[in-house]
Length: 313
Image (tube, rainbow, N blue to C red; front, side, top):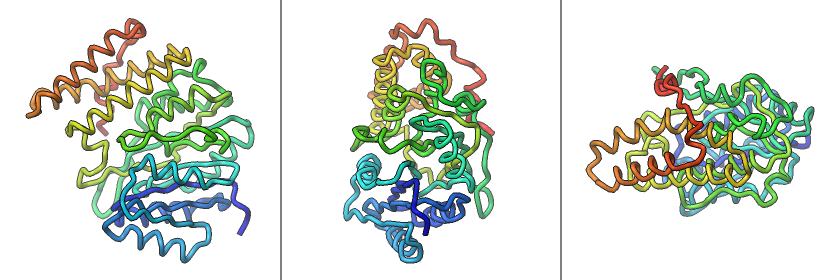
């Protein structure tokens, strides 16, 4: 096998029905110089067996088992510690890479010398016996289209809306002291803003590199914001990301984040709060809204009403 140039960290917990697709998407890559660390984070279903079968049949897969779940942030951090390739990327075990994703991302970094590259992604929804890809959403398109090479967060503030870990590939040295927040949901939002703030230069490309699968049973974190603990983690992640950008002096990026949060997050959260049985839910949402209104960047924020319907097909 050729020497790998990129390591993918692939954590999963109780995703036995999704993991084969993620593994198949790695095997289908046109760029074959990869290795993948499959992390079974305390699954009680057959996820570990799926991972073990992949490792037994392909030496590019390494498997780690956690007897008890440590959480997505901790699982990713454990994987980061084991990376010894030039590049590092992430793939959740319930999602899929597009076939040319690794080739496009590694080639871009090799050409530009940037610290990381971020691509576009689409959500795929259950359809018949499979999944149907949606379109690139407006905020993702604003972050990644057109391509911008060797840019930075001051010159391209809209990039800050692309906060997911698995749409990016980095030079491994960027992660020398960069880690995900542990024991919380939405662990990738703050670290994404830290990446934008720290990078000497980064690239964005409009290519769709990941299919983010929506779970039909509604068990993913992003489908659970009506739960008060998940809401608190979500709001903390949004606050933390804004603070990172403020400390970096990226005030136009803060404004871009406010545009998106006001257009896409506040209305559905307030709708849930209006009928939520726990009054603390409404209180948390109202307090967060008031915090946003008090930010000095709020006066420059102009939420786009068209984004309010962007979650639809």
